[in-house]
Image (tube, rainbow, N blue to C red; front, side, top):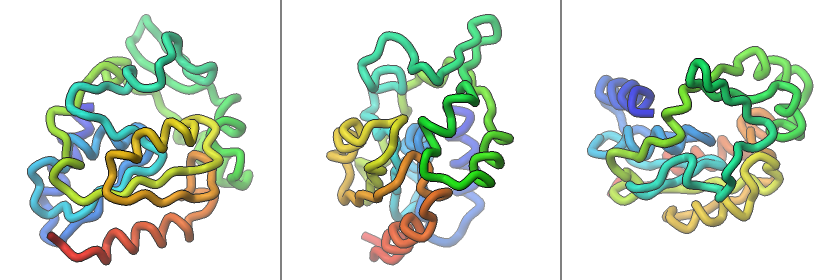
Length: 185
């Protein structure tokens, strides 16, 4: 997670214009860390994502002792992935077949260590934030999303599954445009 956050922070350092930083799913962990202290980040948007405090990790959310049935840990190489056969029904039930096929080609593994890392800073405490609850998400239950969303300045609920950028991009674009139009503090 730290390497991902550092890469985002580096990209933010090259940008002169105000930025709306969006974190989808695991990406919420990345933006919460990356945006802290970055003056050009004017708004954070969390899409069906975790929104942790400084002492919380990915594995501390959800309360499950075992990974979900779609998770595919490989202890021998220290990575975690998702089982492709579960993805369409758990994560993309409202997406069209071409979008599903394209996303299945992009699935990669992540180091297991990210699930135990805490953010080094909590950007939502210093930046305006919006949480997007995806009401039909089967991977991150809406009840859990509403729990994370209580930390955001504003909340928008969309009638989508886990990937609104694929299933209903026009709805998510509206939310992002509103965040971008928010006057800077």
